[in-house]
Amino acid sequence: MRLKCVAIDDEPLAVELISTYISRFPDLEILQTFEDAVSGAEYMNRNEIDLLFLDINMPDISGIDLARALDKKPMIIFTTAYKQFAYEGFELQAVDYLLKPIDFDRFTKAVNKALDYYRYKNNVQPSSDDACIYVHSEYRMVKIVLKNIEYLESMEDYVKIHLEGLSPVLTLMPLKRILEKLPAADFKRIHRSFIVPVKKVQSVQNRKMRLSDVELPISGSYADEVKLWLKM
Image (cartoon, rainbow, N blue to C red; front, side, top):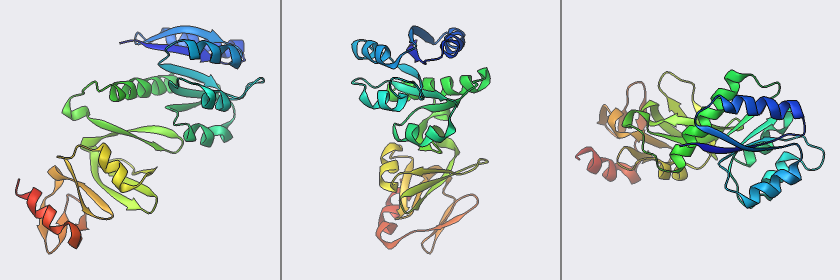
């Protein structure tokens, strides 16, 4: 597997740096680089691209507008010196957002995220220990390893994903939608506000479910369903 890459940036040194970084990854192949957005967009609408490194602040057209206008949308890693554009990149579901000057370690993290997401989108099955989903949080796409999930909590328009030994992740998504991303046999809803991993249920008593470090309520509308899957 090699991801076909394009880099677009009006700064020649920036294009050269990204090309150099890409060349260090055996799973990436740089097809073309462009110093103007229009030529880059024309090329991309004629060719299949997996991953685009795209500068936001360019003179002829912004990277944000270019991304919106593409007929074929690849995964995108935005590059820019201006942090205030992060939210717009988030709206376009960018894989990541790199601030200039870009160091190689940070670039590596972004590439690994893109490679993981590519495998996820194309149903390249990981081992059960590596099974994951992706959500958007804090202007970036975040990988959530399923075995690390303690429980998921609805907070109005957001879902708070509680993780073992890690800080919670907050994502703008209804609980019903994130449940559709999770393996149905492994994650169950027990309340309008909570989803739990089945394997981490320790006990149930009086409509209370005990996980390792927390006790959660079971609502009446889910009580019979909980009884059924606990017997499985």
